[in-house]
Image 1: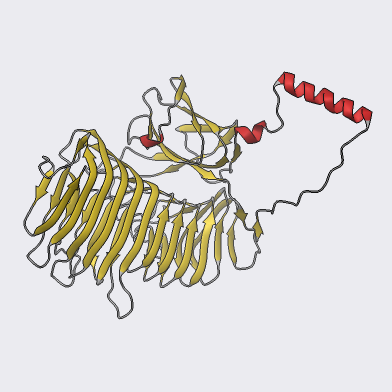
Image 2: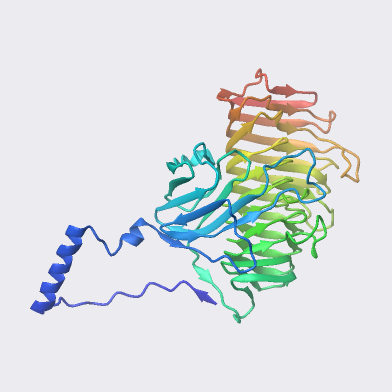
Length: 486
């Protein structure tokens, strides 16, 4: 295993008193000053690392990307494979994505066959202002690693541009306990990881496989692509692109996931799971949920970009056992989310757990959504409680519903009774964009299975603070202790 080298210790250096060398040094210094050249300019202007596209992998013909005069390879992601093609949904067609690593500040140059005159850079909270060079070329500056959607025409064929931090750890073929894939297209189909193993996908690698994780202290990392798009809907060899089963201390870091055939990252009966700087390029099939913690605890999802057809994040209680089957201490933060058909967050439809609690969603940009982005519908006597949703920025496109809190009984439940909702905070949330209803619906199922202790603090829709009397509010029966702060 290779890691970043340590900073060497400084050595004492005596001044050079040789008159010839001193004269040469003075002449070089004068040349530097008057020419404007700086030997550290490449560092101060930003460092960039790019990766090749492997033979056999088709590049995107829609966009060409350069960063600090280095070519960045662009890839394609499909949408709506059969049997979903031609249905009533329109996701805007296939789209492009690209990865590179950077530090410092860099200038990105993007060229397209399409007009870029009306391009929008999302999330808009980053305040990135592109400079139009001509109708088909623009430049933009990134002062830190970010994940952005470059949209000439909304959802229609955008470029998802993923600027990663410089990779500090790397591995080589033959390293102990490392399953290594170097640059190129690989087709192992099924990869099984057990305790103390590392799966490394190098930049420029496209690995066509699904991964089963079962054990402790396991890492999946690199700058490569894990690709599920060879399999038809729900026919992959594992069942999820990354299935984490009865495991602990698992980290997924830096990779890109494309074209999952079913739920994408699924920790089940697992604990201490970290998903960091992971990019999901989905929407090829339905039921391709982004990340679904099931009966798991202590899950951190941070610095990610998720585009999916189905729910971006769904918390589920699929099993009920004598051991801890709760879904608890789940954090989603510092990420950008895009859902083409379903919900951004779904909590509770599969509710076979005593508790779903201590959940935090914070500092998120929701750039596209369709159905209710915050859907909390517990059943089976599950207690959904202690939920914090804060510092969320949303782009609306005229949707009917914004928030729904409602205990229910549905087709996914075995025990046909509703659940409970307790202590939910919505704080510092803005929903802007196109006009729409954006309803906020709260309703208990009965006197026992009610909704209570709900706070809306500094929540605004189209610039107006949400209040109890707001036109968007729909407050039904069996709802107690609602608070509005603004």
